[in-house]
Image 1 (cartoon, rainbow over the protein chains, first blue to last red):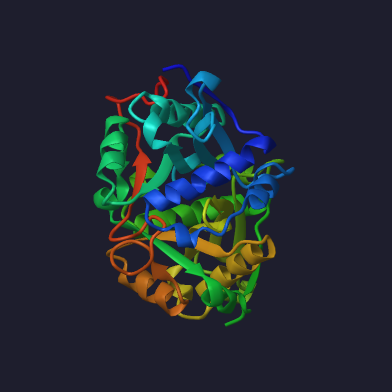
Image 2: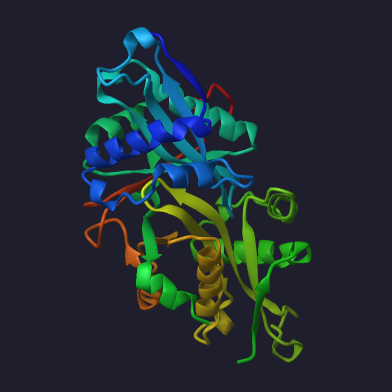
Length: 169
Length: 179
């Protein structure tokens, strides 16, 4: 299958917003998505972006029945480990179902790894739901390992009213 | 106890590097620390920093037996959730043992939360080791929740999400580069 991988631009935010919702539906959490197309435009394409995007595109001849040619994406940002230094965090990796199994997900992830390494990163981090066997198998095949299992790290969060309370001096 | 919380500067990198090693020893992983004082200076204080730091200081009269007045720190960076938008990630939070229990850790974390919210963030995320009961209790008291296991809601946590990482592995090359 013919496809191309390229950096996302402002015009891609509509399709990225669409695919974020598709990914959220796949993860069974679509009611939690608050980010809009406008948020993506503002947060991803301003002077100090919060994230970067990569888009996978197919030729017109392979567009979906709804007419989409942008059929996969990855979002990532640079981060830091006080042990290892520069890292890249892959926030999302998604390929529309009918385009899976053709190397597109791997190409997207590989591009995140390349760009991260070009920026001096020595780790690529991400999270995956433990019921998501297809993804777990995919990531294992890419050489990834589970640091929660290996080291006992747990993901913690503070948000909403608790975050506001924490921020009080 | 008298203490102050302020943004870290280039001169703090020596003490931050020292305290990173102390934290790594506490977490029993000091052999994994590769970051140096020079890395911190370059990565935290250049035009596009990879992280930001906050330092806790005590007056000279309360310096440690080794003469340190910088006795705690936090490192954080801005991040993103494709569901919720802008987030802040707290990479490290540390207070030297003899200064714990005095509100310094809470003040450091509170500052991270304030700065994150000022930048439009709606989540503060971090990780903690599952055997670290003192820290787990501290974070619960600050209103934080575990996002893996059964404690909460998903994003990456429904019924036991996992944090994954590509660790340097001689066998696998994701991007065709030597690690």
